[in-house]
View 1: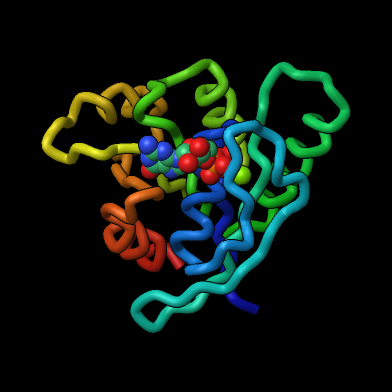
View 2 (view 1 turned 90 degrees about the vertical axis):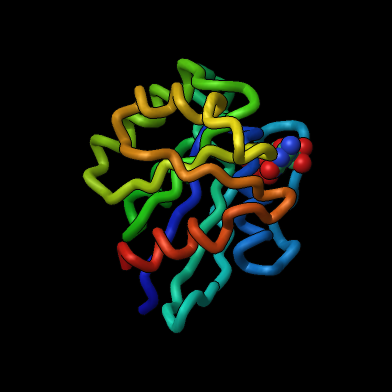
Length: 163
Ligand code: GDP
Ligand code: MG
């Protein structure tokens, strides 16, 4: 079986956009409203001769008891449990949130290798938007723009290094 790379993070940070960008597909629905991806979504990807299975999740919304949100969160936790590498996506335009810190704690407990991905970085000359994410204690954030396809090659290099 191929190694599994799971994309997690709170809703709306751009997980599905990144999934589609890496897999070259449009199967993950990109939405302005959270909670659209309920189940896990799988697609194979290749980079520099390495194959892996990428998993999109509906995201981890913390502190919400709505049964649907709880179900979505369970799916994301299941994706983490089966993953060899986790892409933890945060939103550099929004900045660090309490939900990001909750997700970071959950990921730390999982013991899996985590790549911290700062999405929605459209100006790579300005280090300010990614700086605060160092506080999560998950290493250097990798700045990308999923929607514009910026720095995706560097991210893929980081992924296959860990496979
Ligand atoms: P998900 O809930 O984490 O799967 O997030 P989506 O992929 O559905 O994206 C949520 C919103 O963020 C959508 O309106 C996307 O178009 C937008 N988005 C995703 N990636 C980027 C990016 O790199 N830059 C900007 N500016 N917006 C983005
Ligand atoms: Mg999504």
